[in-house]
Image (cartoon, rainbow, N blue to C red; front, top):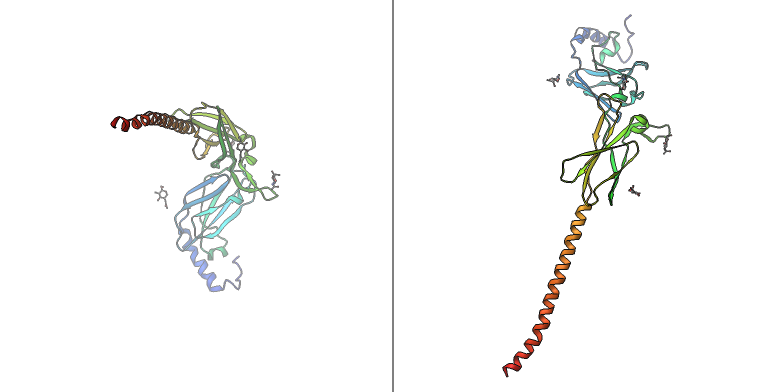
Amino acid sequence: LPPPASPSCPRARLNAGSQELYVIPELPTAVNITWSSINFKTILRWQPKPSDYFYTVEIHGQTSDTQKKCILTAETECDVTDVLRNVRETYTAHILSVTSLRMDNFEEPPFAVSEKFTPYNQTILGKPEIQNYTQKDSELNVVFKDPLTPYTFPNGSFQSIRDIFKHDLQYKLYYWKDQSSGKKDAITKSHKFEINVDSTKNYCFYVQGIIPSRRENRGGQESVVLCTSVGRIFIIIAVIAIAIITLAVVLSVILCKRKKAKPAREKEPLNGV
Ligand SMILES: *[C@@H]1O[C@H](CO)[C@@H](O)[C@H](O)[C@H]1NC(C)=O
Ligand SMILES: *[C@@H]1O[C@H](CO)[C@@H](O)[C@H](O)[C@H]1NC(C)=O
Ligand SMILES: *[C@@H]1O[C@H](CO)[C@@H](O)[C@H](O)[C@H]1NC(C)=O
Ligand SMILES: *[C@@H]1O[C@H](CO)[C@@H](O)[C@H](O)[C@H]1NC(C)=O
């Protein structure tokens, strides 16, 4: 049955719409569809830029109902984070190429299908934020924070990646003596590392989240590299100490010479007389 003419869609427009049926199959469909997802914030991107048509994204889950996002967008990306909340589910996206008039038709618009995407297995772990680090005696302490996800608890606070991955999540610390290339690493399931190090050397390090059970994307983004400066402080103290000692020696030598010189000079005029 043809759709009834609505006030917002007069007969002439409808006719134009059905004429476009012949044009619509030629609408370009999306290509190069990619999922990019960090800490469960997920953006779908595709090409080409539309001209005279729009895209609408449909997210199909295995168990959940199909959900539409970015309806009639002229962009070539869509933030689908909020429709992938069931993170263990596997989703596919259909990217529909539509004209606005077409929305009144029953014909299915042409569309392209993305690859499958399972947020729990595929989202990239973002950079951990290093909160605090100390190198005291022979212990290097590094305290860091879990990256947050865009998902919230019922009380409104953001869930961290640890709230979602629980025991599947670990962190790896890579550390090395400053200016050396031999990297060591350590693993933790907590928020800190306590490492035995050489107390006189500076160390550099970074932290990375890992999910050992994954086959791909096991390691996440690396935190910034930070270096301790205990060795440098030793050197500065040593330099200052040497400078003070040298100054003291030089001063005492000068003072001694003056003391010896003074009586000698006082004698001179007497000798001269
Ligand atoms: C899709 O990606 C390929 C390779 O990156 C590129 O050559 C091509 O131009 C892209 N297609 C569109 C429509 O932009
Ligand atoms: C930094 O770490 C030390 C020891 O690891 C801890 O006592 C201190 O409370 C931490 N400071 C902050 C701001 O987290
Ligand atoms: C919100 O709830 C979560 C989990 O129940 C809890 O860990 C968090 O501390 C709560 N946040 C606030 C601000 O109450
Ligand atoms: C997700 O990863 C787990 C562990 O590697 C695997 O058992 C499961 O089949 C994966 N799920 C999908 C949908 O790929």
